[in-house]
Amino acid sequence: MDILEVYRPEVGLPDENLRVQQLLDMARGIHDRLPQPPDEVFRELGHYAQYNGDAHSTFHVVRDRESFVALTHTAWFDTSLQFNALAVNPEYRGRGIAHRIIYTLARIAIERDINDVWVYAMRNSHASKVYARLGMSGVPADDERQVSHGRYYPMSASPHVIITRSGGMIPYEIMGELPQGV
Image 1: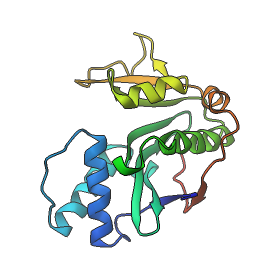
Image 2: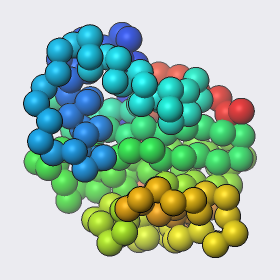
Image 3: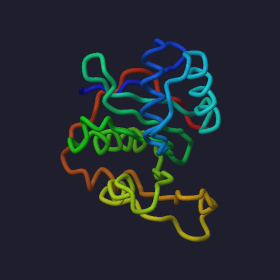
């Protein structure tokens, strides 16, 4: 469980894509959907990626042997890294996996001279508390990301703050190529 793998639905097996969809649903607060046929799952994952950064976005997974432990979807821009989704399998929660994913990608953001990591989080959710512990806070009222997204609100921090708050954490090894910014 020391690898953060770039995941491509077009290469993934149907069962893997279904598990990615289930983790993505968990991140989005969808808990009661029945499994979809493989072609529908593939289409939905493609639409999600297209809507949330298109060619500048990617899914990442953490595996434990053959099962998926965690998933994130990010979009990489020249000046910011956006987390679109982040979910950890309930059996693996409380082990710092989400924190380690954010830490790992914040380190890469610094390498790319990106100074803004942000996410839309549900107010008072477990995820928003994790982001807050890492130094993320609500963006100013005049920030363009401050548009209404229903139950979600934008949180942001410098990747340097995230690294500082994370202490001496060991980053995941990245497997696969990350998208470049625009």
